[in-house]
Image (cartoon, rainbow, N blue to C red):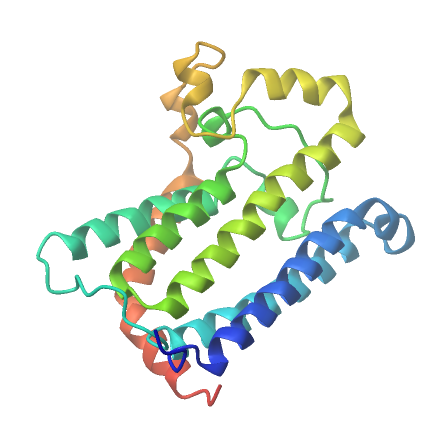
Length: 237
C-alpha cells in the first residue's frame, strides 16, 4: 500500500493531541501544588483557559482536515447511518458534560473543590467523560471514515483511558479509604455496577435543570453544526 495518504496533517494532529494531553493531565496532577500558590479560583480559571484554548485549536484543525488521508469506508449514503450518528453524538454530550457536578464551581464562581460524586450519571459510570468521548469518536469515525478521523479518535480515546487511571490515582491519593468505598460501588464500564447489584439507578436524580440545559445545548449544536464547519473553514490551518 502506498503511504501517500499519510499526509502531514496526521502528524500535526498527533502533536496537537500530545500537547493537549500533557497540558490537561499535567495541570490536573499539579492542582494541589498550584492551588496552594494561586488559590483554587485562579487555578480553575488558568486550567480552563489552557484546556479550552488547546481544545478549540484541536476542534478547528479536526474540522478542516477530517477528510484527509485514505477513505476507509463511505456509509454517509446509507439511510440509517445519519440518525444513528446523531443519536450517538447526543448521548455522548450527556456523558461529556454531566450535570451531576456543581456548575458554579466549574465556572469558578463558587470556590472549586474536589468531590467524590456518587449521584446521577456517576451511578452509570465513574468516568462519564471517557465514556462520552468514546461514543463521540465511534459516531464521527463511522460517519467520516478517513484515516485522519480514525487517528484522531484513537488519540482521544487513549488520552481519556489514561485519564481514567490518572483520575482514580489522584482521588485515591486525596481521599484514601473514602475513594476505595466509592470505587467498590461504581464502575468504569457503563451500567456494570448496576448490573452487578453494587449500585442503584435513581431516575429522579436526572430531573435537574442542568440536564435540560445540556439538552438545549445539544439541539443548538445540531442547528449550528453547518455554521461551525463554515466558520472553521475560514481559518487557514
